[in-house]
Every structure is written in structure tokens, then in C-alpha cells.
Amino acid sequence: MIPDARTAELLSAGELLLEARRTATPLADLPVPLQPTSLEEAYFVQDAMARSLEPSGIRAWKVGAPAPDATPMFGPMISAWIADDASVLADPRIRLRGLEAEISFLIGQDLPPRLTPYTREEIVDAIASCHPAIEELEAGLLAPSKVARFTMIADLQMHGGFVHGPAVSGWQQIDFSKESVLLAVDGSVRVERTASNTAGTDLLRLMLYLANEGAVRTGGLKRGDWITTGSWTGNTFASAGSEVDVRFSTAGNVSLRFA
Image 1 (tube, rainbow, N blue to C red):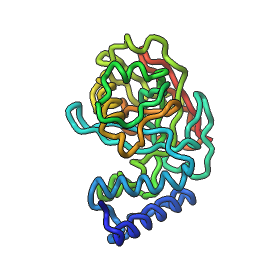
Image 2: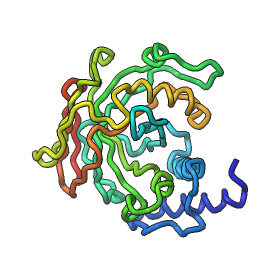
Image 3: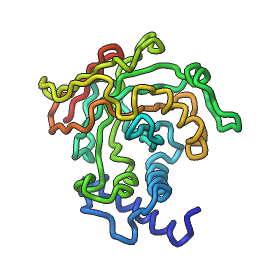
Image 4: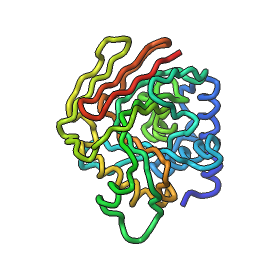
């Protein structure tokens, strides 16, 4: 539980980060008294920012982990920043134009919080479809890698946008341990890797964590929610006017263009 006095400071941190994003005028850092000092505080700022942007409730989440055996982390994505394949991203707030190739899922049935943990089979049954995706990275911070880790996490974990490709048929048969990905910017291959998600290739582990351990924070997953499951390509950066193509060996293709 975060004390009331600290709550006010963390809400102020979220407001500063939102204003920096809205105006594309990044902060060098948060004032020291407003900087989150724990993961709980960082998540509190994330959720406050998301509530401001999503008054009707969060309907999309990003989840990942730094290693296959690490505890996953997750954060909200914003519905207004979700776009279809081949979309042009022209929002004035776009500044960094960071890129991550990912595998995402669309939830097809509600998974409300419950005492008995969901099983892998139940998660598979609840998934309506699987899609290739690009997460676009933004920040209210000038150089997110140079501030304290909890401050970077608080700033929506650099989430700035999400573009999903067409649904992949027969995704349940994909061996993600053999899946390859290619990310190209303006026709030039920037990244080409195999089995390269930092969280490992057991993507259902991440989905299970979100449905079970994350349920208190998410309120449970709901039909129509988008879930994206971490980067296969690390962070790559593009420029205004760039065209971006992502091609998975089995899980399909997705593209976007920056205005």
C-alpha cells in the first residue's frame, strides 16, 4: 500500500510524463522527490497515466521478461494508439520512433480473476487469434536508458503504439523455438534473428502470468483485449517518413510507415 502523501507525488510524476509526451517535449528526468523507488510505485504511475488516457478502462497489455526464467513484467497499452497493418503513424506526439517486432494475441473470451489458477489449455482456448505485431516505442523522457530503471518503467515502459498484422492460421502448431524474424527499415535489414525473444519462446508462460498473477492489477483479461508478448528484435529506431517491415518465418508479416 502506497501512503497518501506518496500517492500525490507519484500522480504528479505521471502528469509530468503525460504532458511531456503530449507536447513532444521530453524531460531530462523526473524531479528527485517524484521518482518511483520500487516496481510497485512504477506500476502505480503507469496505471495513473493509463487511466488518464483510457477513461473507459485498459483493454491492451504488454508483457515480457528479461530472461526465460525471470518473473514477467507487464504494462498497459493505449487503445487509441492501436493500428492495423500498413498504417501510417502521424500523431504529433511521435518522436522516438522506436521499433520492436513481437507476437501478439487477441483474447476471445473473458478470463476473470478467480482463486483457481488458469491452465495452459484454458489460455489457449481463450485466445481468439495470433498476430505479428510492431510495438512502437516512445517516452516522455529525453533518454530513457539514462534515467533510473523504475522511472523508465513508470513511463509506460516506453510504450508508444501498437500495429498488428493479419491473424495467423494454425498458430497453435508453430514451434516458436525455431521461429525467425526480420526487421527492415526503408528496405534495409536492420535485425535478423531466430528464437530471440528475451523472455524465451514459451509465450504461453507470459499469458499465464498475466491471466493469473496479473489479474489483481488487470481486473482479469476480457474478450477483445490485445496482449503483446515481448520483443524479438531488441530496440531499433527509425526516422520520419520511414517504412518498416517485419517478417516472421511462420507467424506472418506486418508493416507501418511514419509520416
